[in-house]
Structures are given as C-alpha cells and as structure tokens.
Length: 247
Image 1: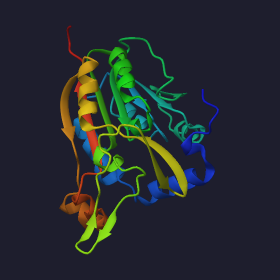
Image 2: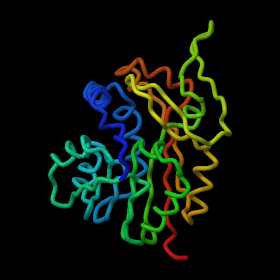
Image 3: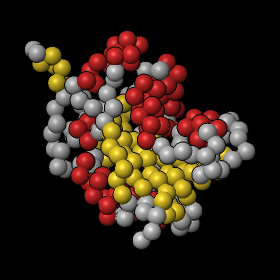
Image 4: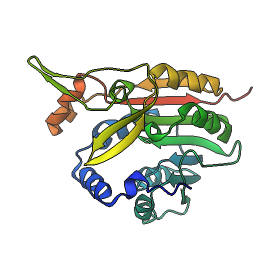
C-alpha cells in the first residue's frame, strides 16, 4: 500500500468534507445517489463490491436492501473507521486502493462505485479487472465527475461573464491528471473523455446499459436554489454496464 496519506485521511480535509456531508451541501443527496440507485439492478441475493465506499453509507444501504454479501473497499483509515460503525451481518470492509485491489475472477454479481473512479490513474485497466471479477450477467454501476467538469487544467471552475456564469471546457482531449483546490487542499483527479468510458467498457467485454447526466429538477431547486448553476452543464456522469450471460 502507498505510504502517501490518502486524501480523506488528511485531518483538515476530512473535517471539512464531513461537515459538507452533514450539512447536505454536496451533490450526493440531491443528484448523485438518486440517479445511481435508479440504475442499480435488484440487489437481493447478490454479492456486491462497493469500490471507494467512504463512510459506508452506501454499503450499508446495499446490505439492508437484501444483498447476500457486501464488501466495502476504501483506502482511507478515517473513512473506514466510520464505516465499521455500521454493523450488518453480510457487510465487511477492506482497506485498499482500487489499483491494488485483487479479487477472485467471477466472484461478484454487482460492482458499485460512487464518485471515486475519477481518482484512478488508469481507468481502462481498472474496468478490465472489474469485468474479470464479475460473474456472467453481473453489473457495474458507477458515478464520476462529468468529463466537461474535469477537462480544465487546473480545475478552476466557473468564470463570471457579463451575461452570467459560464463553464469553460478546455483541454478536453488531454486525458491526464488534473489539480483542484478543494477545502484548502490540492486534490489530484484524472480526466477521461466520455468516449474513453464507453470504449473501455466495450474493450473489457461489458455491454453498456445506460448513461445518465443528472441535473436538478424543480423540487430539488426549491430545496437547494444553489443547484441552479448545474443546469448550465451536468456535474456528474453515471454509467451502467453488464457482463454478457454467455461468451
């Protein structure tokens, strides 16, 4: 395992991130989680991997929804300490990065990842490994920051123009690391084109089931008027794929 401190183990970053989640100021509750769950298959009786499980909230939900087993994997000691406070007989956790994780072939029915794969430096290689972990007919569902958001280098965000806010899309074709200042911390993410997401799935032998680019609806805007900026461009990309039932 890398000796570098995982991002979410940095004390100030961890505290600020937990405050954001507790206050409901992120995109998880209003956009990402509803969209992701809408793409999931029926989880009853499935063996599931939650890759980048964070504090275990999603893993606990999968277990409570009837999964036969749920393995939550995350590199952060602090996040896993929170996750292990969520007890369920079919739920267990493992500390590892996505890059170093090894699992038996054809051992899973579902792999889920919530806003974690944009931290992976070689997404196509990981998707190929996930395809090997899935049983025939198994599913992969994941969310990442949208490629129009990660394209900027550095990821500086909105620009103010006389006509209002605009989101610049620059260096879209340069698939490489990006830097972003988030909670007073320099964060590294990786930019991949939409075509790379789809092409990597196909190369891994998976079948694309759905793409989603959720944006706030009227009810969400009533609860969170600040989300209106995300009507200008989609903040998230969600992908659902399936392994063929036979070669």
